[in-house]
Length: 115
Image 1 (tube, one colour):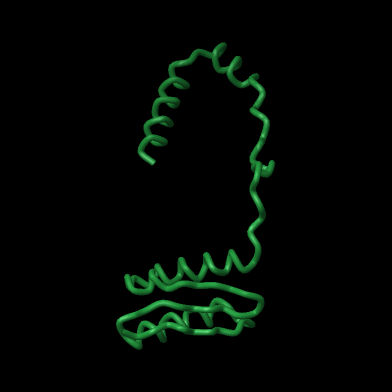
Image 2: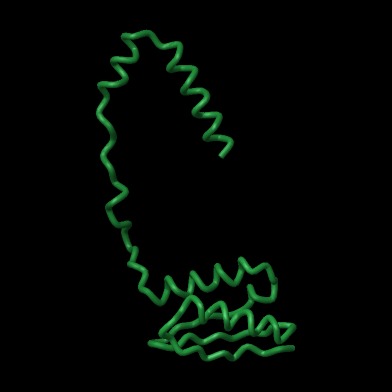
């Protein structure tokens, strides 16, 4: 972020010191071709299950309990399988409720152990 700020400050200085002829020449340059819409080689689109696993994992991490970062999330067909070990029953409930809110329409198979 700091590099971007420093870069834009440098470009601002260069633009402000440029004369009218230099500004006109710079504006006539054609923009580069947009390649962001082209798919990357060897990339495959993410399916809904992969996106949901990522969303669940991020949401569990955002709760702030380190034990929840170790929960494994797998999805097969219409079932979300949760596994791992947490120190308190409250953490297990927190995981299950979080997943239920994000994944309506899925069965939840909770194999989370309380140790």
